[in-house]
Structure formats: structure tokens, C-alpha cells
Length: 529
Image (cartoon, rainbow, N blue to C red; front, side, top):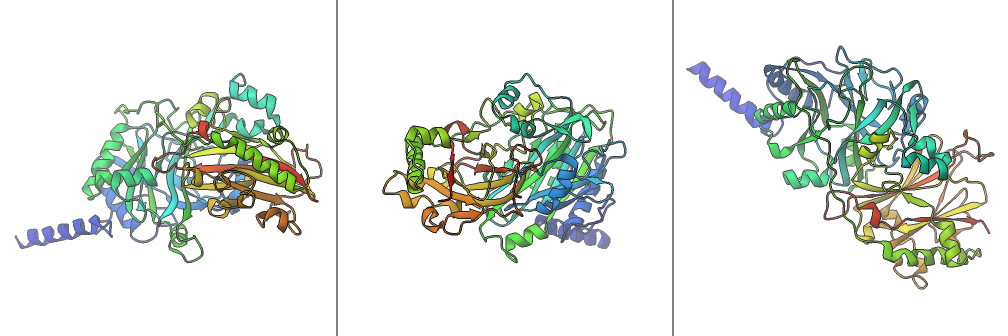
């Protein structure tokens, strides 16, 4: 009886600790990476492994890291792209070990930077597998989101598709951005297309009651049976269903471990922390000591048929209509041209300056499931944002680009906005300007233009000196380190300038705004006086 009472007390202590996701007392066998997760997460993973082993599952453990600008040379060497990264918000990614019979494509090794031996960032799914993530979410920010992607697949482009024909005919120099092969494996193409509706901070808040600074669990799986079993194991660790989030991998993909199967990757985006993200802040500490752990879990009963999910149904997106602001935006562009002594009529300014296109709309259709149908490169899309891109621009010593557009945080269409600067050859993001720095930048024209509080206006050139009066100080100097000078703009070896605009999460919803109601931004070319 005394031994029984001691055992009961020990079990109560373990349960109490698990309620807070503290260090478990029991340890189990698992495949551990050389780089362990911080804090008590290793113990949590071992306890979960024991429970899953009891249910007939085998478990391998991976590790989390950041994908930063420093990883771009590796990505470019392997995939000839840096994926249009956001330099202000490095992605959180995980590397996982391979299953013994899993095909590992040498053509995509180090596609997201160096990994430990035996681990990969991209992987193939066993039909009876799940990726399980445990951890503590970061401090409050404008956005947190987890999304898995179809990374590459075997096949060729649909050159007869509307999207391919449109880009080939009207933006031929951007064709390889949207239709991209795997450089060292001609049998495969890059898709990088979203698979479903992402799990973001609003989704987490609505289901569990809180998001940031909270322990949460995530399951990514093509098998509903495995999802259910993993949930049972998590429940036994006192993790409630409301704190568990599943991202289903839809059934219209090629699931398997052989060379012909699709491979996948998962990104976590964490942007605009409320504490500013500076060195030593809680958000900076979270990024540099990621309190996250990842497990690969699969059923050892290989004779059991998988229970796949149906094809994904994307959520309907809404927006505050911005199209009524079009005439004001044209007036703003005209007023800028007038001030610079380079005037144009409104119609001429509109024709010259409307250079952005909303890529999620037809005929381009940068939406994961649409890209998958024609083997188009979606570039890491998300339904949590609306994206605008601009045609490729050259940047010599005398040109100044003025970018003007609606500011989603002021029109009711965004929680945060990022204006990104990219080198077009490497798809390398070298600078980002947030809505906090864009607000009020068009106010100097309030006496001439209506609704300037809903617009931003920013200038980009090689040298901003002497332009204070013309730019109001809203001028960014693009150095030759960020974007080298290009002597031959037609050369494919030149990195030209690309602008992108991202509007994330419409307030009151859990998705980005509907692209159809977002007013396209403008860029106008000016010459230094």
C-alpha cells in the first residue's frame, strides 16, 4: 500500500507539471538532433514519444532554426532564388531527419541553408505520418502564422494555361519568377504553393482564447486517423483540444516517400513584435532561443489504409472597398510630378504610374491550389495577405522612384503593411518599410489631394542628398551593396529593382483582404533635378 501511495503521489506531480508543460519525470527513446531544443522541451518530447510508442507509432525528432538573409547564398546556389524573403522578419523553419526508406533529393539539399547531417528542411510525407510541433508562442506582434507548402514536384509547366500565356506575352522578363524549374533536377519544378488556410494568431486566439506567450501544439498531417491518435496522446499530457491546431494536407497531392512524390516545407512567419524586436527584447530572445520542438510521427502498422483529407476549401475573404480612392491616388501622383517640375496630365500619369498588379487575381492567380494545378511557382503565398508586385525597374544614379498607394492599416484592410525592396535576379529581399514608417508620408499634399491620410508616398534612389524638400525626408538610399549597379538592363546577370507590397490580416477577420477590392499602387519614375 505504501508503494502504491508513493506511485500515486508521483503521478499527481507529473500531471501537475504537465499542466504547465513543465519538465516531465519520465524519459523515452527518440532520435534526437545534435542541436537540442532549449529549456524543458526535450523532456516534453520524450514523454510524448513514450505515449506515441505505446500507441504503435515511431517517432523522430528534428529541430527549429531561423532562415535569414545569411542563408540566401546557399538558397541561390541550389535553387537560384532567395524566395523574396522579408529581411525584417526572418522565417522560422524546422529541419527533420529522414525516414530510412525516404528519397532525399540532392538537388534541394541546402535549399534553405545548411542543415545537420541526416536532416532536411524539405521532406516527403509518409501517407500515415504527422509532423507534431510543441512550443511556446512568441510575445505579442502584428502577425504570427504557420503554413505548410508544396515545395517541389515532378512534372512540367502548363505552358498553355492562361497564367503562363499572360506572363509570357506581357511580362516576359518575369516568366522565370512564376514558372521555375529545379536547377539540378530537370524532372521537377518549384511550386512553393500554400496547401490550406494557415494557422495564424487570430485563428489561435479564436479557438483557444489566447495566442501570444502561450503553450500550443500543432499537427500537420495527410492522415485523419493519425491526427486523432496524436490528439489522444496530447490529451493524456493534459493538453486540451482547444490548444491543439491541425493543418490538413489535402488528398489531391502526391503523398509518398519515393523520388516521384511531392516534397514539402513549413514556414512560421513572426512579424512586427510590439516590443520593437531590438536586441535583448523578449521577441528577440524568443527568436534566438526558439522554444519549439518538432517530431515526425508515423504509424508502424503499414497495412492500415490511410484516411486522407478532402481537397482544401479556402476561406472567403472580404475587404473594405478602396477603389473609390483611385482618382485621389492619380491626383497625388500628378501633384508629385508637378512639384518635381516634371508634370503630366492625370490620364498620362495614370498610364505611366499604375505599375503594380495584384498577383492573387486572374490571370496570374498566385494562390496555392491554383498554382499546383498548372505547376506554377507561387513564391510562398498565403491567404493571410494580399500581394502587389511591380514590373522590374532599373536604377541608375539619376533616377528616383516614387511609390504611392493606399495604406491598409488606414483603409481598414490590414493589421500591418510591408513595402519590400528586392533584387530581381536573386529574388532577395534587402529592405522592408513597415506601415509605422509609411503613415503620414503623403500628408504634405493634403491641401491638394483628398484622403492623404489613407495613402503612403515614399521615394527610392541611390543618393537622397539634396532631395529633402522634394521628398519630405521620406527617401531611402539604395546602396550598391544592396543592389549593384547594372550597366546593361537587358542582361539576365543584372539584379534590377523590384517592389512588393504585403497587406496582412484584415481587422475583424482571420484572413487577408480580398484582392479584388484593393486599389493597385503606383510607381512613377522621376529624374533628379
